[in-house]
Image 1 (cartoon, rainbow, N blue to C red):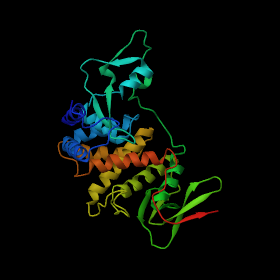
Image 2 (image 1 turned 45 degrees about the vertical axis):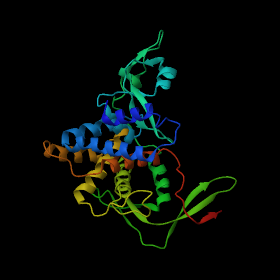
Image 3 (image 1 turned 60 degrees about the horizontal axis):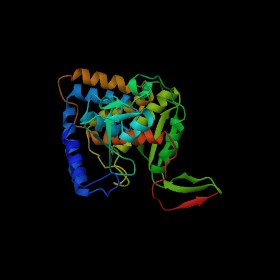
Image 4 (image 1 turned 120 degrees about the horizontal axis):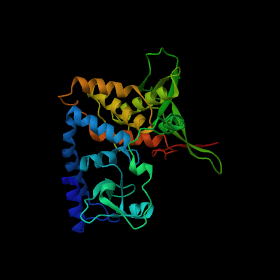
Length: 320
């Protein structure tokens, strides 16, 4: 077990935290400091490649939690909390098993265990394929993810526009001129209600490309935005990280595109970009990227493709 999970488990034993307790800010800060000290192990090209491949195929948890799992147990295959192992698979946690720490939605942390740290109860059914072969490659295609992501991008003032361009031109994101607004749907009943959001960014997509290529472009350009490469309208939404080198910006965006598309089973040019870069630097370090920004942005963009998200806090509303 890593120093990070040791620290958090010790805190739980000492009564400093439970899944239902208020999260201590100092404890949070210490734990996150420890986490990102541990991520320095991914500075080498080989280690970073292994991390990306793991996260891209560890689909049942968000990218950030997949990274946490890999930090603590690189050989993990399928993790779940004790109650899920018992309820869904009739398996109990082995004595002396080490918990892995991941972030819990709407809460502090949760403790999970890999399948290797469980044992079946009497008459337990065989493990299903998603547990036995969680890393099996699935060939996917874009369904509603593209349109849903486009709609959710409006809440951040992003307008996605098609453009007629050559095959070598995929897309770009840029700051928009002030003065225009976008309508973001708040609710449909009892009558449609919208919120006006200032137009802040224009994202251009090559309309001649395939749905998968257009989605990969959309993810890549949004990755630049949410990594803070264009600044931020509110530092509570995402950080302002202007001033990075082009190499760092592109490496972060390509990493995010690789993760989001890879978790959908979609082939994308980012795989070739990263493969070529890392092959040339096999014994060297990756650029000085923010692994935190990469994982958080990948998780956000992935979430944007799954369903309608709540608008950011704005001011003006309109009804029709």
